[in-house]
Image 1 (cartoon, helix red, strand yellow):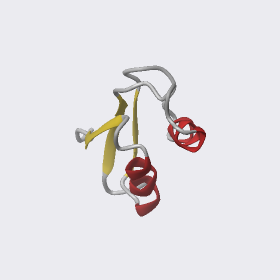
Image 2 (tube, rainbow, N blue to C red):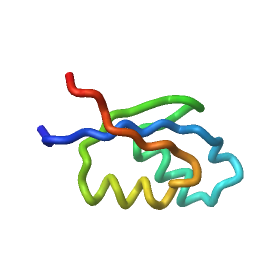
Image 3 (tube, rainbow, N blue to C red):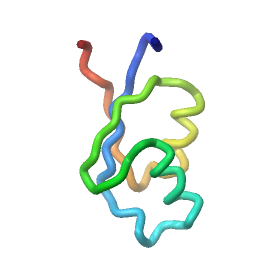
Length: 64
């Protein structure tokens, strides 16, 4: 498992966003508003988050 996790929260609706941005939100595992996921902090995840940074909030995941 990855050393570090990030928590991603969907804070704005992707309804008016471009179709590729809506697919990126779905690929991150975010469905409904205010849903959260914890994903490994990798360059691939960071790139997806950068594409939809106006729709999400990113924080460090608390240590388990």
